[in-house]
Length: 133
Image 1 (cartoon, rainbow, N blue to C red):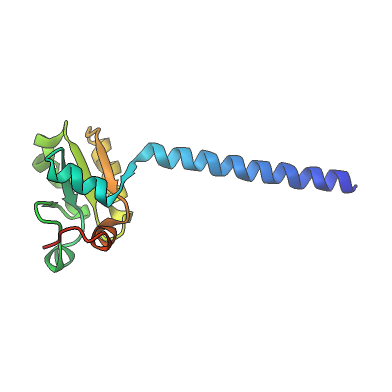
Image 2 (cartoon, helix red, strand yellow; image 1 turned 180 degrees about the vertical axis):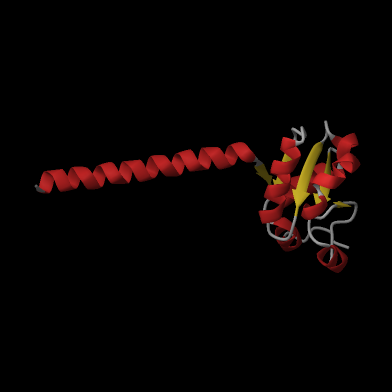
């Protein structure tokens, strides 16, 4: 009886580990995060654009100079504004990373291939001491 209980717990642990690994692979396939420092370097070298998907009041409070502001709720309707950047690197950014991940999914669905989410959002950008307006 003890051997079968040990086996059951071992099997359960293995299944949990495999499920976690599969979940990680799925989420990594959806989008890639980019660190604030790497994003700043690529943005300053004009290798990428930043799309801020926060709401208007958040944008007015502070934003990354030169970023394009399109709130997440308006992104699908305003995709034409980004058409010129379809083959460029696009970095989406919000407050902490949740909305920008959704923006990445929307952009990829619309045919934008080189899209990343700013890891930690504007909070991480600010923590790194990077420029804000």
